[in-house]
Length: 195
Image (cartoon, rainbow, N blue to C red; front, side, top):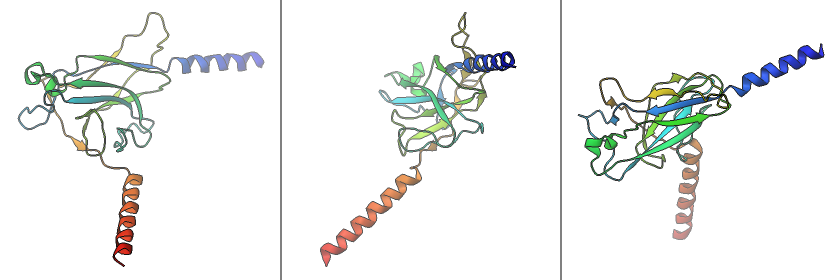
């Protein structure tokens, strides 16, 4: 009986050790605003790409206002930034072009991932963002030999640039509550001064 329990424990540990992912995040050309191939970045502006694990529910939850954090059961795997050059419309950096960056995550089982693009480097309240489609990324063993080949995750469409349907980051409920308390405090202080 002891041998059987030991064997089962070893199998479970080995399975868990292989629950990693490695993803090559890229765009075909880039992302445009959907209004006649308009660039989304001006010279010197930076966009932020995040690779996010959609969690057990497999759904992209809306971001919070605090530094581009995730709501629900989503978790951040990795980030990469893109800065537009002075010739961004011709070299596609104005479209947040990403030639390919490998992002790896450890201890991620059954990863349904998606990429989120913020049209600024802070991902704060009021930032515009765009979510790509969710993709199932196979589990690998990052410590294996030879190292695993990254799964290609392509933001761009085969015909060229993607049309981005952007949403806006909204403040989380706690932030709205604090702003309400602050407004009530200011109103009360003003009434006391007049009295």
